[in-house]
Image (cartoon, rainbow, N blue to C red; front, side, top):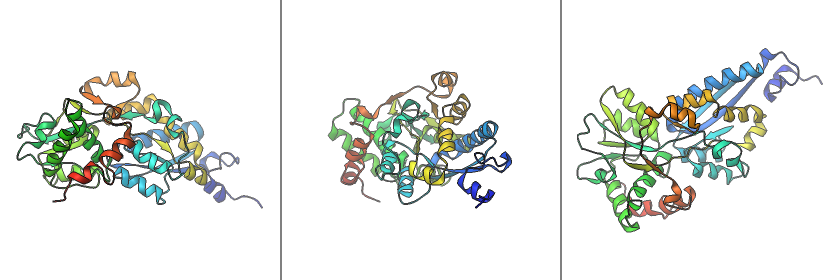
Length: 332
């Protein structure tokens, strides 16, 4: 039986079958965390143009966004991601643990599958009326803090890790760190499920005095506020590591492995690394990061291994069921 063009299109094999290049089309779904919408809109345009020029194939990249841990759960429950670009290894490993991503995924791409890194900073009201400069200022009387739920959001648990590290890496004990985060979360009026929801709460609903945000989200938030908000860089915060990965089971079923692999590799190209920097993520290409040095103020970005064995261990100790967060947080 002769294979129809429609069937070939569904299989993503038109170019291999000798069908005219104009018919070739592929689709990918990138499941990501909340604040990457604008980044991947730019990346997707760049990749689609690059891929079209190289292969003649048209590729459409769809995006899905939400709290990072919620997004990981959605993929586990059947969301058909070809690639994931989540807030940290914790969420990607949750998917790998269900067999959807093959073992050794982190070593498939350069720099441990990290095309960019980030950190957590503070967004405050114009003029910084509460005088927030460092983590201890967040627990002063009358300071309301906006941060997402660490159970569902990468922003949320990275902010918790940052708060914890700000104590123990300055000589504080575990007991002092517990006391600090207990006070901090008593001053959080609402826990949104994801980073973008927290941004809306702070900048549009005008709740809170300081917002603990991804660096890129903070920059976007301040730009859109047109002078009503400012960024404060604390002296110390976490090195956030948003890994990217292929979802092997899905790409093999979708017949999209080749284009999905090329999509992730594109993130390391000079073109994409410039996009990354322009969207206020810190590129892992050292030369491009240096070119944008004035964009990224210095601060001590501590590694997760300075406060735990690794990200999963930190999550288990501090956020997972029965961890520190469960013992210190009481919903208002």
